[in-house]
Length: 465
Image (cartoon, rainbow, N blue to C red; front, side, top):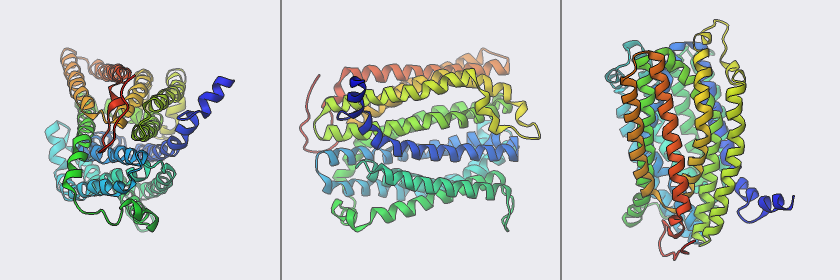
């Protein structure tokens, strides 16, 4: 009992970690519940819409992933400046990210106009490509907001003010759910818009979130952090920001490309398997995205302790995050295999559309049961080393392992003729990729090079184990 109390209450113990991570976990849960309900509504609308939403969403994620990854890395700078008591530089670094986000808005609007051509070139059927284009175009209206969200929310996350982020995300998720149902099925003077309405609701909610974050960012109490005075482009600071943030963005992009490849290749094999994969990922998002919230909390504490020159405390919080994450995902991994009905009942429909894919959903959940454990390990350790500034190593590992995943998956699938077996091979390849990442990042963390790293200026770091 004494050891448990120490684990809970010591500096960087479970209590301190959860104080920062729980609001982030709640934020990711609100977002994943929103996405989960979005897919349930589309299941009720049509299986064709369900088959289109995942590949279209994956492509939309991929094209935003590079600047989004750069934007999210702003939190590491904020955390280290905060820990090193260089708070006057916080506003300046956030403004560099805001400028990047503003430049992205017209680019995504232009790309969104060519969605149908993109999906036809991938090899999807014309009917499916039309639905994918509708969702992709609607999401493109909010893509700029997604980048700005990553940046401005980092202002609060890096300081440990994660409760603010939680409340704003709760509001946006609630608005999205309300608009989702209204726009998909119509009513009160709004026509039934189906998958187009689902994407439009998401974009409106994203911009609503930006309006709230911007108002909070400019509050007088934040003026001493440079939120109002440090708005200009600082090329020296931008260079430093991109030096560390760009590899983080490249990690997002490369992983996004690899996962998107998985999602767009499945419909070319079987649209039924694609619909089942969409259901499985919407289910697992409810489980794994809270672990991303835990990883963000871990990364924030690691960044603050690196700024304070206390790497041992950073190490402690990382292993505490690992323990909490494995306890959480372990329960769901067992349930995926032992009681899959707990996760599929919400997708049942009176017309029996879900019955066509239910057996595949249960099968794919078994793959997810294995890889969600390893995904937790890699999320925690990669969050920790990125919180210190070890982003170059991460992007190199991401490039090599993503190429292995796509190469092994494509080679094996080319040697298999039966469609279901072909899809199963892709699931096996995906699971192997995540297992490999978890092993590499664990070894990198144990190596300890992250202890002597920093992303900010003029901080002499503690070396060594």
